[in-house]
Length: 507
Image (cartoon, rainbow, N blue to C red):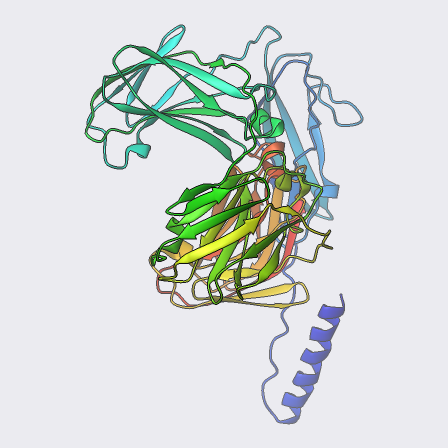
């Protein structure tokens, strides 16, 4: 309100000044008149017999004046709906609900279709699906046929959805018969974590077990997809995979550092890493340490190390689709570095499962000693700040964010602005962006997080507009995982600004 008052006073002042100079008075920009409503909801919904369903949950109304009118929504239906808006789902069949919004003489309506399943309905078991290869689902197995496996072998695979994986189990077992000498890769994933193991077939029935001990029980609970690949380029043939089973309970061993172009010597209190001349692609040389059961209530992690003076080291922690990294230049003495994890949620920190050490200084060779990591002091979280990539800058004043971009490249996704989201409310099903962009240019809004990503495009009108980003198709668990908002301009060669004045999470 203060901002609008300031603009009005400034406009009047400028107008008086121009009239005094015998010049034209500039037009006053006013909010558009309310003439229509847009009602949003997830349509053609199918729900289980006897389940709970609130007919107002996820329903949003927005006027063409950019204001929200959700509290004005009413509805009518021939179905039985309680005073608390709960649908009677003990009657199966298809029902219609008409939603209505009225303000003065302006009225908007929209019809919704909901289907209640029969009481005897049984959810069918998931089946294998093939991508770039064919699958034939059997009663207790799947036959996967493939031809001339490409160099990008990962694009050809067979996938099976998993329901209700038991996180108390820490291994999964497959029996299969493949073509002798050909390599197959078995993978399980979900919730931002995964485990994969290759095996060379010998032409007979074989067994492969994936070790899930380095995942937490909560992470294993989130596993929801099995994927099988053929890694042998140019290979053709058939592999028969029997139904998967849980494997034997594996004993959890204390993790150890593994070097990739590093030599590692470790004991109970520290590890010594010897590295050859660091290449231009320095990230290809590193040492990694798995983490078991990271305590998400801790929001920092501390490393004590002694490196070669002037050599730059990068410490990184990751897992569950999030990461934090920080570089430090060694001075030749014992130093400490603390990674601030305060902008992650407790659930995200619970998912951290890997520490990585890099040497960034090109052509550097030497040794660095790193002591056993420990939790650092509690860090008071600060408000997340917009970050940019490519030829993009961000200026923020109050709640208004101005994103300036220059000469959008062909690979437009490399130019963007992003904002970390802390504790996204999974009950919200829409994000309303109020913005002004360059007329005719397309912008893309994206949300992402561990195991989830969704993006939608909108063309700017050159004036202030409200873009409703519908995320109702994501499950509550997926919305709970959202931790990043990203904004792109997709018009190659374009330059300009997009001004975002409000971001609102709504139902």
